[in-house]
Image (tube, rainbow, N blue to C red):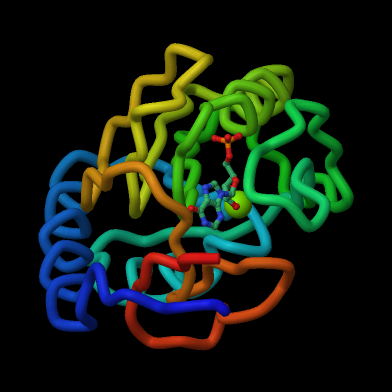
Length: 172
Ligand code: IMP
Ligand code: MG
């Protein structure tokens, strides 16, 4: 039986998103900011975050897949949608839903660096540190979470639960 245990309420999520958006707005004043969201999981977070920003911003997405239908990354990352915008000389901020092993982000940072941006930084809604394999600097993070598989607010298990407004621990 699957059980959903509440982890973060909408109110807790919204407060942190607004706080991180204020920091990003301060840090990127006068810069050429491009947000690059990692699909599919980051789209809910990104849509809330970008509407709290007070600096001009452009958006793009890449789609990374590595999971299949399980709960651990295979480490074999594939891009099923590549970058569309020209980011040469731009300040890129990657928007990710959750960093677990860090392998997805390490791959995407390398991929984006190859286009010659002025900077590449990372903003993640959730930082799950226990299984980290790649040393990733998360420049802006909203919540540090413990072990366990989380769903809701864009995060899925086998494509389900993305539409839940709050974040839950899925017990299988
Ligand atoms: P990593 O490569 O192990 O850091 O995995 C990162 C990707 O796996 C994220 O972009 C998520 O889409 C997915 N992921 C990792 N942990 C979870 C989780 O607890 N729930 C849902 N998706 C997760
Ligand atoms: Mg993801």
